[in-house]
Image 1 (cartoon, rainbow, N blue to C red):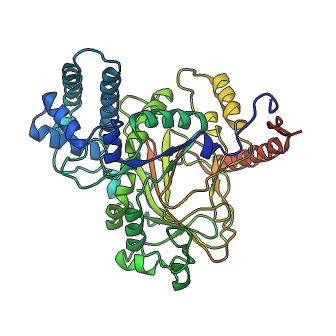
Image 2 (spheres, rainbow, N blue to C red; image 1 turned 90 degrees about the horizontal axis):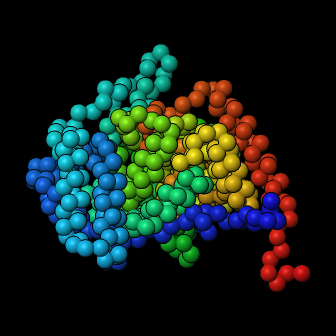
Image 3 (cartoon, rainbow, N blue to C red; image 1 turned 90 degrees about the vertical axis):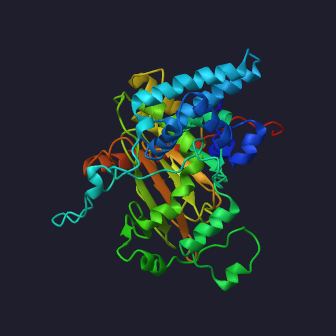
Length: 443
């Protein structure tokens, strides 16, 4: 098979990488509408001032796929205009009238001003088990808006155009992971590093090279001065997780998600339908955390974030080379748990898994620069690699989106996924060692 169908040695860079650019640039190219165009179209569809404000509240609270609806509507309008099909203004009006009516029937245009959070948001630490009962549950987190943001907003998030979003969805379905280059701009990265107290040594500050100097060690004392009851949870030796949901720091980092929101909805709407989730299944932000991989942190075990449809957004604030604890992925392994859109059944799942799994020459390594983003399916088997640096730390933000409370498995299931990951990784290494087709110009 390897001789007839050569795998890709750098899947993330060659087949699953997408470049984010500022929304204002995308609008200038005609790849994404401006907020003013979107708001005007919604009003053209019959929405009143109060209804437009309610719609934005509903979108922020993830009441439904409003951002996806807008993405599809604008894509339809753009395709019709490119094909020169009739009266584009009339088509846009008819399209948005139908859209506004569907939103009205769903109750999005009557979203109250007061945010009624789920009861699980009130859960705290169980004094018997010492576990946080709200972990992984819906606590009513808000997300920033991309397409539906206010025209007066000064925010100019980096994102993908409509065509690139569709391509990224296809790559996510096939491989289970995509790399978004530059989802954060330089100024935003710097502001986050300062606000989250990433300390830089004087020696590193004066060196040339990366736009963002490395962090030798992350001291959480200043962060905990802002949030006195914020404690680190250690998953494996050298990995500290600071859970930010429901805290003041959540508002500080929430804007990181803006450029990814349309892609999150576009993928998860299809994934939920393929998995047979009920129509009323609600998407929510299940996790917001600051993840610190300290110097000499050990390898994680192979695992999945959830056995149900979901996505993880990983955005480092430091560069992540191969020796600084990058995330490793087994491409296509999400297919072992996920139904294939349009081709349900175990045979289709296994066939699509092997196609994606052997499409990469070795385990996929998530090397990336500060401000890039990895988005991967919650069912994809992955792990954090060891940090082989004794004087460098990796600092990243992690957001997770789920329909059901993660992880969806107990201790036995977790161990099973770990064994499965070990076995598949051995197979990948063996497959990578096999000779491939001769390259052009070689004897």
